[in-house]
View 1: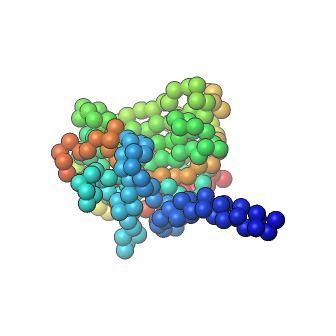
View 2: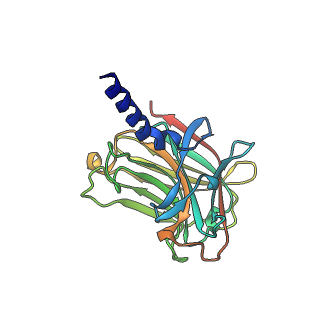
View 3: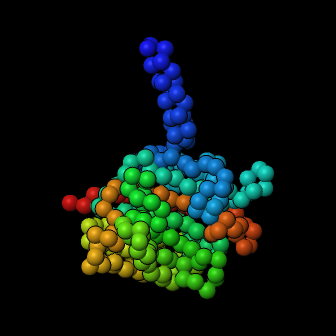
Length: 244
C-alpha cells in the first residue's frame, strides 16, 4: 500500500510539472505565467519566454520578432489570479496606432475550461488591422457567455504617431464599458474614444465568472509583419479595481 501511495504521488508530481515549471514574471503587483510552445493559438504562432520581460522601471515588454533559428516568435502573459467584475486599465507606451497590419496587440480576459470554451466569455481590447491596412485598428469585442451566439464588437480609428495612451474596460453584470484615451507627455487627455455594450439579454451575452487577464503580441493567422521588422509593445502599468 505504501509503495502504491508513493507511486501515485510520483505520477501526480510528474503530471503537475509542466504547469508548475511555467516561467513566471511579476508585473504591476501581480504574478503572470509566460506562454511557450509552437503552433499555439492565437494565430497559430510560436511563443517563447524570451519575448517577454519586465524592465527596471516595472514596464512590461512584449516582442514579436525572429528567434535564433530565424522563426517569428510571439509573446504572451496570463495572470495567475482571476479577476471578476471591476475596472481593468492599462497604460501603453508607443505608436500603437502605427502597428503593422499583420500584428495584433491584445489586452483581454479569457475563459479557462471550467468557465467556458473558446470564443465565449472573453472581453477584448485589441489593436489590429487584421491584415488589411484599410481597417480601423482599435477593436472592442465582447464574446458571449452562450456559445450559440456571435460576438459583438466595434472598431475605431486611432491616429499614428501617438506615443502614450490609456485603455480601460469596466465589466459588470449587465454591461461592458470601454474607454481609450490619447495622452500627451504630461498624461493629460487629448482625445477619448468610448463604447458601452449593454444588451437586454445580458445573462447570455456577458460572462459572469472570474477569469485571468492576458497581454499578448502576435501575428494574425501566423503571419509575420508585412514590413519584415520586429515589433515591440510596452505596457507601463496594469491596474484592476474590483466593483463595489
